[in-house]
Length: 193
Image (tube, rainbow, N blue to C red; front, top):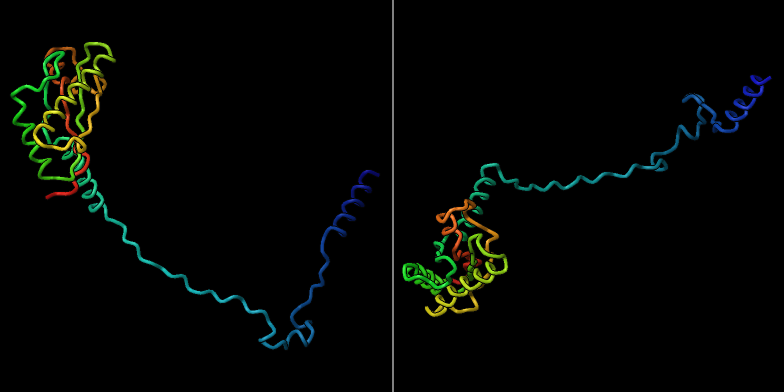
C-alpha cells in the first residue's frame, strides 16, 4: 500500500510539475512558420567591437630604475648634510661644526625655496622627558645658528626625538657620543635661484 501511494504521489507531482510541450519535428512545422520572412524574425543585437587602448606597462628595468632614483633622492635628503654632535648634557654648537653649518646656510640661501627639519637626539642616559627637552634645545641651538647666518626661520623646522632613535645601541661612551646629535632632513628643494 505504501508503495502504491508513493508511486501515485510521484506521478501526480511529475505530471503537474513539468511543463508540457508538444515536440514537433522540422518537417511537421506549420507552413507559415517555415516561410516566415527574414524581417519578422528577431535579430540578435549586433555587437560593436570593443575599443582596445594600449597602455604602457613599465618594464622591470624601468621600474627598478625608478625605485633606484626614489631611493637615491631619499638618501640625498637624509644624508645631504653631516650630523652635528654635542658633548654630554650640552646643547651649545661647538666651533668645530660651525664651518659645516655655514655651508648648510649657503645652500639654503642658494635654494631659496628649500625647507629643512633639524632633529635633536640624545643618548639613553637620563629620563625620557629630560632627553626630549635636551634634544629640543639641541635642535633649536642649531636652528638659531643658521638663522644668525641669514636663513629665514620659517624655512627650518625642529623636532626632538630624545633617546628614541639611536644610531648606536651599545652601552659605551663611543656609542653614546654618536647618539648626541642634530640631524638634518631636507623637506623640499623647490625654488632655486
